[in-house]
Each structure stands twice: as C-alpha cells, then as structure tokens.
Length: 219
Image (cartoon, rainbow, N blue to C red; front, side, top):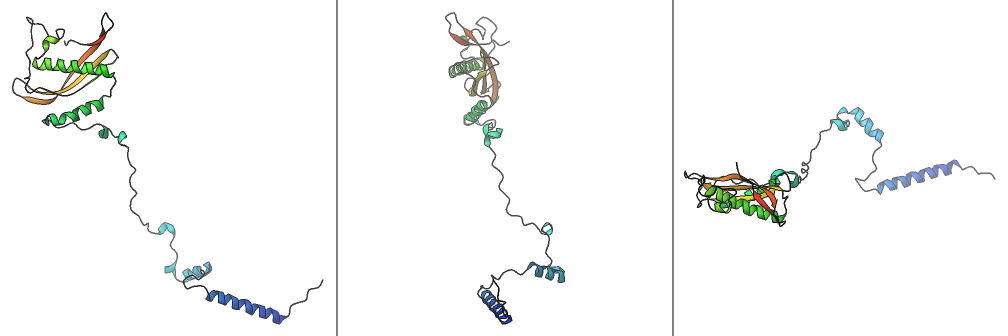
C-alpha cells in the first residue's frame, strides 16, 4: 500500500487553521485566568532586575499568629487544688469546715466506719476532759482519781471548741490516733485557735470477744 504525499498548500492551510483555533481559545479565557507565564520568563526578568529576585524562604520574615492556648492541667495533679487552704487565726466557727477538709485531704480514710466513729467520740471526750476538766471521772485509767495529784484544767469551758477531728491508723490495725484541732481561752485570758492535740488508742478484746478501743495513758 502506498501513501500519497500531502501537498505543500494543504500543510500551510492546516497550520493556519490550528493557529486560528488557538487564538480563539485564548480569547475565550476570562481576564485574570490566563495560563501562567513560563518559568523561564520569570527567571529572565529576575536576572534583569535584581530587586525583583525571589527571596528564599529562610530569609522571609515570619508572621506569628495568636499563641496557641496552653494545654489544660489536671486538677488532680495539683495538691493545692485538692487541699483547701487553712483559714486565718480568729476566723471563728465559719472556718472550721475548711480545717476539717484539710485534715481529711492530708490523711485519707483507712479505718472502718464503726471504728472511726468510736475513736472520734472517745477522742473528743478525752480532749474536753483534759482541757476543761469536764468528764474526767469517765476516764479513770487516764486521769488520776480523787485524793491523788490532780492537774487543774487549763481552759475555760465557755470558750472551748473542737474545730476539726479525724481518726486514722497508727502503724498497725490495732493502733489508732485521733488528730484534733481546737480553740480555747486559758486561765490567763489568752484565746487561741488552731491548737493541735493527738490521742493514741490500742484495740483491746474482752473475755467475751468484744473489741474496743482503749486510750493510752500519757506519761
């Protein structure tokens, strides 16, 4: 099979038609959306005018946006978030709740509820008896009986107040301590609050098998 060569006139006509179609296509492109100029043109322009040369990314100024918010910090990892501050001296009964919360935060519960109630009742009564003399007869093993040397109470009953108290283990399941914070006026007329006293107890078992907490005598 032979191929008939195209005439020069046909080749010229085809070239003209393609050129016209290309021009019409360019006229149909909206203004501002023309295809970008070849990269060689930009390079040539920059070579002619150094002031228009592209600046490398490393030398361009950095535009800083608004700072990102700091990550949230868990309140569980901040001790001050768990332990409320102690009230100032002289706050009165209004500050007792904060003192109680501080004690509970510093020493978590480690006793059965029944033992804790028994120890708190005994610790409060012992502190009142020791400071004011009220109820000492209920604790003959702790306070001397009549006829022996008796320590006079140092605080008046009118201004005595227990501000907070907790009971916790004291090294073993059969030993406990009651921490008390209290306020009172001494015999010299000086009032002070946030006083601290500790009463220690040991667990004893009766012949019938009943367990109870007995206070340790002070030396």
